[in-house]
Length: 184
Image (cartoon, rainbow, N blue to C red; front, side):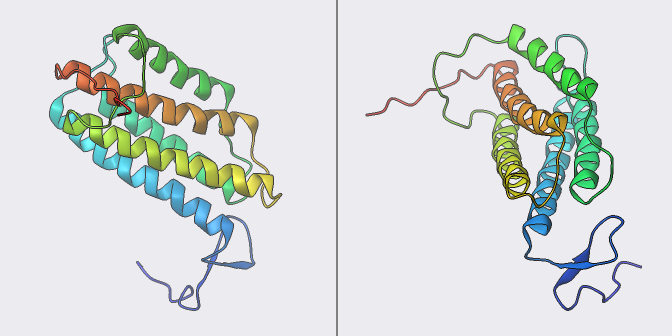
Protein backbone atom coordinates (compact mmCIF):
# COMPACT_ATOMS: atom_id res chain seq x y z
CA UNK A 1 0.00 0.00 0.00
CA UNK A 2 1.41 3.40 -0.97
CA UNK A 3 -0.50 5.32 1.69
CA UNK A 4 -1.61 4.57 5.23
CA UNK A 5 -3.49 7.75 6.18
CA UNK A 6 -1.55 7.74 9.47
CA UNK A 7 0.42 10.85 8.45
CA UNK A 8 -2.63 12.90 7.52
CA UNK A 9 -2.38 14.77 10.82
CA UNK A 10 1.17 15.94 10.09
CA UNK A 11 3.04 13.27 12.03
CA UNK A 12 5.30 10.39 11.13
CA UNK A 13 7.04 7.50 12.87
CA UNK A 14 10.74 6.64 12.88
CA UNK A 15 12.56 3.32 13.13
CA UNK A 16 11.69 1.28 16.21
CA UNK A 17 9.72 4.10 17.80
CA UNK A 18 6.09 3.80 18.87
CA UNK A 19 5.82 7.55 19.28
CA UNK A 20 4.85 9.76 16.32
CA UNK A 21 6.81 12.96 15.61
CA UNK A 22 5.84 16.08 13.74
CA UNK A 23 6.75 16.12 10.07
CA UNK A 24 8.16 19.61 10.71
CA UNK A 25 10.53 18.37 13.46
CA UNK A 26 14.29 18.67 13.12
CA UNK A 27 14.59 14.87 12.82
CA UNK A 28 12.04 14.74 9.99
CA UNK A 29 13.89 17.60 8.28
CA UNK A 30 17.20 15.73 8.51
CA UNK A 31 15.67 12.56 7.11
CA UNK A 32 14.10 14.58 4.31
CA UNK A 33 17.44 16.24 3.47
CA UNK A 34 19.15 12.85 3.29
CA UNK A 35 16.33 11.54 1.12
CA UNK A 36 16.73 14.58 -1.14
CA UNK A 37 20.46 14.01 -1.73
CA UNK A 38 19.82 10.31 -2.29
CA UNK A 39 17.14 11.06 -4.89
CA UNK A 40 19.29 13.65 -6.65
CA UNK A 41 22.17 11.17 -6.75
CA UNK A 42 19.77 8.85 -8.61
CA UNK A 43 19.63 11.47 -11.36
CA UNK A 44 23.44 11.79 -11.34
CA UNK A 45 23.75 8.00 -11.53
CA UNK A 46 21.48 7.73 -14.56
CA UNK A 47 23.28 10.57 -16.35
CA UNK A 48 26.72 9.12 -15.53
CA UNK A 49 25.62 5.76 -16.92
CA UNK A 50 24.50 7.42 -20.17
CA UNK A 51 27.84 9.24 -20.41
CA UNK A 52 29.72 5.99 -19.62
CA UNK A 53 31.97 7.82 -17.16
CA UNK A 54 34.76 5.76 -15.59
CA UNK A 55 37.64 6.63 -13.25
CA UNK A 56 41.23 5.93 -14.29
CA UNK A 57 41.24 2.87 -11.99
CA UNK A 58 38.24 1.46 -13.92
CA UNK A 59 35.61 2.39 -11.33
CA UNK A 60 32.26 3.10 -12.97
CA UNK A 61 30.77 6.42 -11.79
CA UNK A 62 27.22 5.06 -11.71
CA UNK A 63 28.14 1.99 -9.64
CA UNK A 64 30.08 4.16 -7.21
CA UNK A 65 27.11 6.52 -6.84
CA UNK A 66 24.86 3.51 -6.24
CA UNK A 67 27.09 2.46 -3.31
CA UNK A 68 26.87 5.98 -1.89
CA UNK A 69 23.07 5.80 -2.14
CA UNK A 70 23.06 2.52 -0.20
CA UNK A 71 25.25 4.13 2.47
CA UNK A 72 22.87 7.08 2.76
CA UNK A 73 20.13 4.59 3.72
CA UNK A 74 22.36 3.40 6.58
CA UNK A 75 22.80 7.01 7.72
CA UNK A 76 19.03 7.57 7.57
CA UNK A 77 18.50 4.44 9.65
CA UNK A 78 21.00 5.73 12.22
CA UNK A 79 19.24 9.11 12.39
CA UNK A 80 15.91 7.33 12.84
CA UNK A 81 17.21 5.35 15.82
CA UNK A 82 18.76 2.19 14.40
CA UNK A 83 22.08 0.99 15.83
CA UNK A 84 23.49 1.03 12.27
CA UNK A 85 26.12 3.61 11.33
CA UNK A 86 28.95 4.23 8.92
CA UNK A 87 32.22 2.44 9.52
CA UNK A 88 35.83 3.47 9.26
CA UNK A 89 36.09 1.19 6.21
CA UNK A 90 33.32 3.07 4.38
CA UNK A 91 34.98 6.41 5.12
CA UNK A 92 38.30 5.05 3.82
CA UNK A 93 36.60 3.69 0.66
CA UNK A 94 35.32 7.14 -0.22
CA UNK A 95 38.73 8.68 0.56
CA UNK A 96 40.44 6.22 -1.81
CA UNK A 97 38.11 7.29 -4.62
CA UNK A 98 38.72 10.98 -3.92
CA UNK A 99 42.49 10.34 -3.93
CA UNK A 100 42.22 8.54 -7.31
CA UNK A 101 40.31 11.46 -8.78
CA UNK A 102 42.72 14.02 -7.37
CA UNK A 103 45.64 12.28 -9.10
CA UNK A 104 43.86 12.70 -12.46
CA UNK A 105 43.18 16.41 -12.10
CA UNK A 106 45.26 19.58 -12.19
CA UNK A 107 45.77 21.01 -8.69
CA UNK A 108 43.19 23.39 -7.23
CA UNK A 109 44.40 26.99 -7.26
CA UNK A 110 41.09 28.85 -6.86
CA UNK A 111 37.38 28.41 -6.41
CA UNK A 112 35.55 27.42 -9.61
CA UNK A 113 32.35 28.72 -11.09
CA UNK A 114 29.88 25.84 -11.34
CA UNK A 115 28.98 24.72 -14.81
CA UNK A 116 30.82 23.46 -17.82
CA UNK A 117 29.38 20.08 -18.62
CA UNK A 118 25.88 19.01 -17.66
CA UNK A 119 27.36 16.17 -15.60
CA UNK A 120 29.62 18.54 -13.64
CA UNK A 121 26.69 20.82 -12.96
CA UNK A 122 24.62 17.92 -11.62
CA UNK A 123 27.46 16.91 -9.29
CA UNK A 124 27.81 20.54 -8.13
CA UNK A 125 24.11 20.66 -7.24
CA UNK A 126 24.43 17.29 -5.51
CA UNK A 127 27.39 18.66 -3.52
CA UNK A 128 25.37 21.59 -2.22
CA UNK A 129 22.45 19.33 -1.27
CA UNK A 130 24.88 16.99 0.53
CA UNK A 131 26.39 19.94 2.42
CA UNK A 132 22.94 21.07 3.54
CA UNK A 133 22.10 17.55 4.70
CA UNK A 134 25.39 17.42 6.60
CA UNK A 135 24.63 20.76 8.30
CA UNK A 136 21.19 19.52 9.32
CA UNK A 137 22.58 16.24 10.69
CA UNK A 138 25.24 18.09 12.71
CA UNK A 139 22.62 20.58 13.92
CA UNK A 140 20.34 17.95 15.45
CA UNK A 141 23.34 16.14 16.91
CA UNK A 142 24.60 19.41 18.47
CA UNK A 143 21.15 20.01 19.95
CA UNK A 144 21.28 16.55 21.57
CA UNK A 145 18.26 15.28 19.63
CA UNK A 146 20.23 12.34 18.22
CA UNK A 147 23.55 10.65 18.69
CA UNK A 148 25.53 10.15 15.53
CA UNK A 149 28.78 8.26 15.12
CA UNK A 150 32.02 10.03 14.26
CA UNK A 151 32.31 7.80 11.18
CA UNK A 152 28.91 8.96 9.95
CA UNK A 153 29.96 12.59 10.42
CA UNK A 154 33.18 11.90 8.53
CA UNK A 155 31.34 10.08 5.74
CA UNK A 156 28.93 12.98 5.22
CA UNK A 157 31.86 15.39 5.11
CA UNK A 158 33.73 13.24 2.57
CA UNK A 159 30.58 12.88 0.45
CA UNK A 160 30.57 16.55 -0.50
CA UNK A 161 34.31 16.32 -1.25
CA UNK A 162 33.63 13.33 -3.49
CA UNK A 163 30.89 15.17 -5.35
CA UNK A 164 33.15 18.20 -5.83
CA UNK A 165 35.87 15.92 -7.18
CA UNK A 166 33.38 14.23 -9.52
CA UNK A 167 32.21 17.62 -10.81
CA UNK A 168 35.79 18.63 -11.56
CA UNK A 169 36.60 15.27 -13.12
CA UNK A 170 33.49 15.40 -15.31
CA UNK A 171 34.57 18.72 -16.79
CA UNK A 172 38.10 17.41 -17.22
CA UNK A 173 36.90 14.30 -19.07
CA UNK A 174 34.77 16.46 -21.38
CA UNK A 175 37.74 18.76 -22.08
CA UNK A 176 36.18 21.75 -20.34
CA UNK A 177 38.54 24.15 -18.60
CA UNK A 178 37.38 25.24 -15.16
CA UNK A 179 36.82 28.95 -14.72
CA UNK A 180 37.54 30.73 -11.48
CA UNK A 181 35.79 33.90 -10.35
CA UNK A 182 37.56 37.15 -11.24
CA UNK A 183 36.23 39.06 -8.20
CA UNK A 184 35.78 42.23 -10.29
